[in-house]
Length: 422
Image (tube, rainbow, N blue to C red; front, side, top):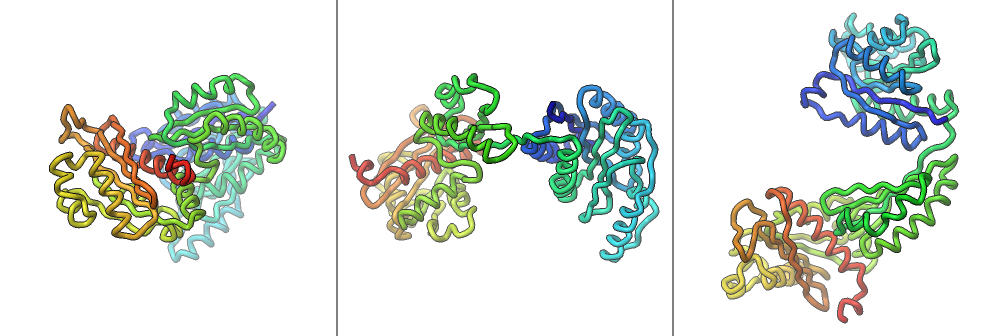
């Protein structure tokens, strides 16, 4: 049987919405990768009785509990005491943790207070998890039945190396966790979640190992293929045929796998062509330029851009015709084309891209509603323009338009020149 755990995040600030719990997400991901099943997650405030009750309840369902938070020196840090209550044990001083704490305070030139000594006390019989980045050690405490509670600090920079370097290896060895879950993530763009589901729906029912999950977010849609195996090689062999099938069905929309981003995929295509790009943005306000410059070395492929919000800037900086603006308006196919051609000529790049639209909430009309955005792409051979209408508030329209622009650019770059001219 696989090792099953539940996760408990401790802290009243989490319940009040004053702090976002990123620890639970990270721990769940790491457990899944290690082959440890996470069957539930909980958040509880800084109350000793409620923490203990939550731990007791979880241990009735699973092999162990992993907690974060509540191990500090203050009066409201009560996780350790609650763990002892839940398991029916007391604490003992861990001399190694005390020495490490004394060295830590000496190194930073601060006096160690008596309440810090409390942090060197751990539940009796625990396996101690060292914390070189802070004062509070973690621990794995055991109950009479052999079930465990593993507790770690809530500070992410202290918790993360403790989890990956100490806790998960300890649990895998002690409980004989042999199978790990390996994941391949295929990234798609400019295709809806429902369409992805339609194209691969039968594959969801094909089996549990490997299994498929779909996660959509703002114009991007990830298809996750997860396989449980004793080795990465074994998992790769299980994932490969399913991956090929999905790639065939979603051909033209998958821009990369795993760590590949749409920005890195675009940069690689430009680099392979020895090409460069510049952008002229109106309604997206520089978001495309920001996306294309996230990568180190982006200056090889992205040379610059202009945020031409007012029409006078479109005319003066991009060479858009005043006649075009008067006849068709700023939000039009004609203006998008001239903006793309103008930025390409001004910065001397192989490609030029433009956006012009109505982000809202005002400025729309029956003919040109809020959310309408025109996109232009100019290359050495031709200029094209397409429009889409996005729903949502101003920020949502701008974000969705940015993702659409990146998707259109990626599709243009991966299409051979001779096919573009047909």
